[in-house]
Length: 157
Image (cartoon, rainbow, N blue to C red):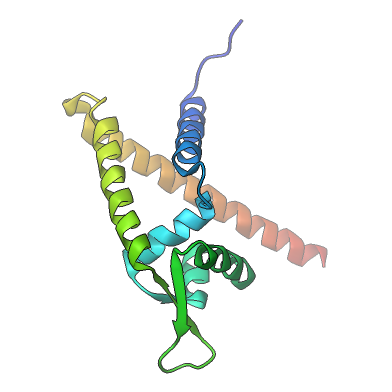
């Protein structure tokens, strides 16, 4: 007997398909999902300190340093001194990376429209509400698990 396909099964399938699509799109480049996420953040917010990037991406300062190092070596970002804090470094997209991100944002919008086009117009609002509800609930579950782990570690110390 074959188990019933669940919503979670479909969401995992979609996640895997997106990962495959991203791997195909970045094949032959030094870009990874983490590096691309950093580029998206810079494209959305503009030049930022490494500390601010680490905070917004929820990664360690050491992790951000490695990501920025790789992106700088690939010609995607530049580092410059902060104008008022000599200990801080500002990370900015290069001109060529700005163009690439503009193209990527356009392709993102086109794919979004293409995918939403697969859904009947009358169902689109419900789909968007459902996806938002699921992602919100998953964020809550992850936060609750992190809190539970922190409490268990504090008790175990």
